[in-house]
Image (cartoon, rainbow, N blue to C red):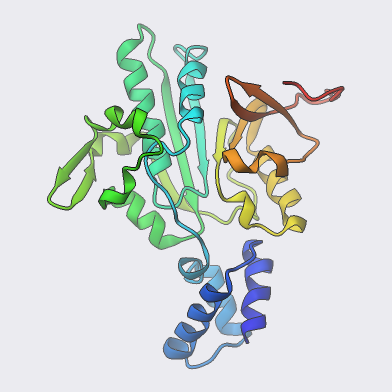
Length: 263
């Protein structure tokens, strides 16, 4: 039934599961359900229970800071505007909170603050529960992104060995469970962050994934992926752009012709 779990991971989630994770899930199902058949697999994959074994939830504050420098500069064009942002495959929420912290800091220095909301989704219900709680261990603060750690100080309170997010940020963020192999809610985002998750999807599912993300973006909307993932993004809806060493993808306007790679 290991093969069946691998097939389910591809068919339901679009991902190539790690063999060690598949074995853990297999053993868990035998222990808790007494069997591993189609009915059990359908139940645990639909509920997201399987995702807690098969998805990678590596996350920390201000990971890959070039994208946050880009976001700071990007905000200057949105004074007195309601900015809609999506964090897709957000894991336990550090990226969404990092975005909110940066925008709050920007607003303090701007005469025309940016109104905003962040929708943050992930396959794993346990990861979303952690995100909603806003309680983290010290691993969420790492060397990568440390140049922005000063922005966490007003919003990340330490108590013993844990950190607690300032709850005032929560009103700007909606966390929810979602499978990206299906379209997001009918909302046109200005920016979608989808970083360091693309590599886990089977190549044949990446076109579906990118199409779903494109549907959720407004024309000229921005898609930001992980630094190491840019070579794999190939979709007719997007043009790659490099601004100050931060690669991102802009959704083409309807009817636009991509005559060349814009750099």
